[in-house]
Amino acid sequence: MVPITRLTVAREPEHAVPISTYVVKLVSRCNLNCSYCYMYNLADRTYVDQPAIMREEVTAALCRRILSHAARHRIGGVHMIAHGGEPLLLGRERFRAWVERVRGALDEGGVSSCFTVQSNGTLIDDGWIELLAELSVRVGISIDGPKRFHDRHRVDHQGRGSFDDVVTAIRRLQAHRLGPGIFANLIAVVNTDIPPREMFDLWQLLDVPGLDINLPHANHAHAPPAGATSYGDWMIEFFDLWFEQNRPDRHVRYFENILRLLFGHPMSTDNIGGKPVGVVIVETDGGIEPTDAFKCCEHGITKLGVSVLRNEIDDVYRSSIVRTMLGGVSELCAQCRACELRDVCGGGYMPHRFSRERRFDNPSVYCPDLLRLIRHIRARVIASLPPDLLAVGSASSR
Ligand code: SF4
Image 1 (cartoon, protein in one colour):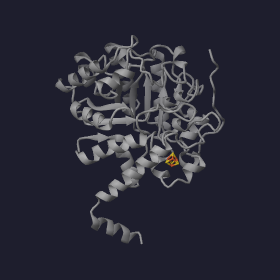
Image 2 (image 1 turned 90 degrees about the horizontal axis):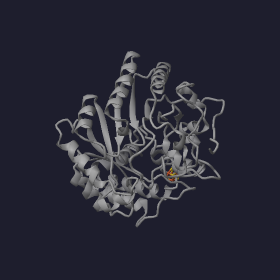
Image 3 (image 1 turned 135 degrees about the vertical axis):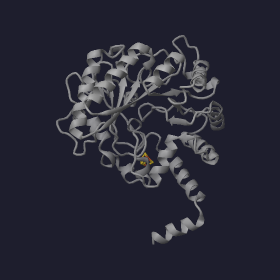
Image 4 (image 1 turned 60 degrees about the vertical axis):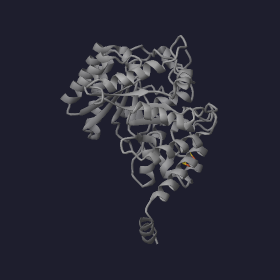
């Protein structure tokens, strides 16, 4: 086995942001084999040594650690995201037992919890819909575009595309009387070979309120996949389609977050805005890790040497990678710190800043795309404001 890089240092960051979102790897295997998957098909191979599913003792330890962290930082509620691999591989009965156990333990300790599961959709049937609704677990489903594009990358271990199964699952959720209460979001990785109009039309056809679009995990050591157009151009075209549609029941979280940031909202997510976000991953073996997208950087980078079996959640604050994540603007490279869009972009997603030579002391590999996109959104918003409002704004800034 290749040795794991441990990145721990002795000091806690001065501004330790409480952890309120736990992405829990219930299953460390997947029934799909997507070509770009950061878990299994990029720089990191540590999944080979992970237990296939999370054991009982790890779940029990996780609950204890969440409660002690919540008590220390006075957190009243947490968001639990069941993740994988494919978390539905756990099976319905074990999934039910896990949710009930975690919710029960946190309730008893005075911490409320909400649950989400992120699925590739291929295993969803009526039994799963009824169980998720009964447990109040919301589900997000990944789809990467029209069939001919989706099936090029999101394939099973025999190389067969999964598009038809995913659309069947979406339609099943929409048709079931309990489905709309738990399902409102699609997740897609941007593929710049797909004409934005075609992606947008697919979204409208599927008729799902929310779409999360994510840039492919890449950085200065692992270049983004080349495509027909640049990522900035692609997202600008997609933004315009969404913006012009102007439907209050159609949400693209990435764009909505940029809009909030442009208006000075203090929010941030881990992929835009640059402010500290309190999220950690808990692996099937109990390992506590930073955002698992770091797996696109190099083998073993997420292995901090801390586990819910031995450590408190606060121990992640001693990791240099987590300190950088939580350091906000002060941890950005000189170019980002001086950038006119720093407080909106925040250097983009930290794993996308990685290079072997300078580690995270770089702008995002998507910097030119982010610059173009954010400037475009800013210009579109200003152009859409009524002239009298603009006049008030410029008078008050004089
Ligand atoms: S646009 Fe580029 S330079 Fe500016 S904050 Fe983002 S990544 Fe850094």
